[in-house]
Structures are given as C-alpha cells and as structure tokens.
Length: 249
Image 1 (cartoon, helix red, strand yellow):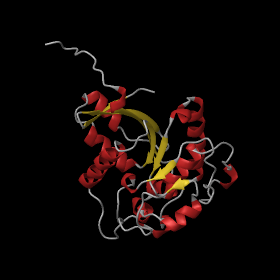
Image 2 (cartoon, rainbow, N blue to C red):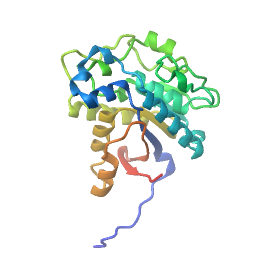
Image 3 (cartoon, rainbow, N blue to C red):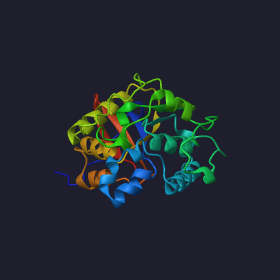
Image 4 (cartoon, rainbow, N blue to C red):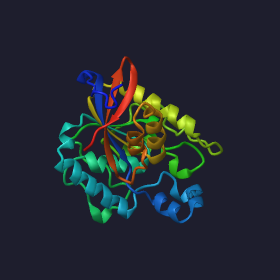
C-alpha cells in the first residue's frame, strides 16, 4: 500500500471557506486569569472588550484588509454576546469608525456597514451556556440599539432563554450545538463566511469535526485559539457528510 496517498479533489460548489475568529480579550478574561471565581460575578454580565481587546481588534482589522480577506467575505456570523459583536463590527465593519480613546465604551459599536459584508447574529455559536453571568446575553431589544448594523432576525426570543442560573452546558452539548451550526451553514448561499465566536465553542466543535483528519492536522486545528485569533478552514460536503480540512493562510 502506498504510504503517501494521492491528494484528493472536491468540486468547489460543495465547499465553503470559513474564517474562524475568537473574540478579542474581554474584561472577564482579565478577571478570570487572576481568579477563576470572578467569572461567577454579576459584574461581568455579558462582558465587553478590555482596553487590550480593542487594540487586538484594530490589529486584526489591519490584517484582514492587508490580506484582501475582507473583500472576499460574503457574510459575517457573530455570537450575540457583547464581546463577540464588538469584535465582529470593529474588525469587519466600515473604515474610520474605531475610536481608541473610547475603547472601553460598549456603545462604541454601531458602526456603518457601507461596502462591508452583512453581519448576522446567531445563538448557535454562543459560548458555553449557563451559570457564568459573562456568558449571558442582553435582550435583543437592547442589542439592536447598541449594534444597529447587526441583523438579529434569526433570534426569536428577546430575552435570553437559553442561559440557566443552575446548569452549565456540557462538552457534549456544546459539540452537538456546533455540529448543528455547521449543518445550518450548508443552508446558506454564501461561499466565504467569517464566524466570530468563543473559545469553548471552537474547541469542542472543531474537535468533533476533525476526527477524520490526520493527528498532526487535528492537533493544529484544535489548538486553543488566542483572543482575536483568526484561522481559515475549508469545510467540504461529501455526500452530505461534513469534513473539515485545514487551509494554511
């Protein structure tokens, strides 16, 4: 048997390019690094970006412009948590709207979407649900006023009915939600999509999707995302069975 199997090809129409982004550093990340118990504090309810987080989105914005990625992206999907939506609007929104002096202001996010891909909020790509106030979202009514360029039409409930005070989502439940999210992506017409989401969602979703990959590729795919890190993947629909292969930038 050939120890070096031949490369394989898939029709382009059966694939999508995904740009996966973990949100920039949030205030809860700073507090949690010092004391994990801080994540249980109501002070970090729907945590917003830290000053370093605002610097990170500025750096990633420069990267997606310089690489030409922004021009190719058809759609941006974001978690409806504040830190993810701030990252999505500031990285993929219009030019000249970032005010570094107001970096800690969570209302500094309603920027123009002129000549930029549409941004849609989706519950399926949220962080692990339950217990931690930092992972509970605001009402959609409030978010619409804070993020007027984001489309919230996919979210049916104004209140956060998914987050529970006494039950934390399991690893298996996150992975199942991630697979449901990927199946939903196949119903979208867009071919190149940026997804702004969270550490645990990325970790468990990619782990579930990479079982058919070579161990070295799986290790690279599933390595922990840094704050505001972007990785590009190709997802392929092979006879309605999804397989993800890593694409070097």
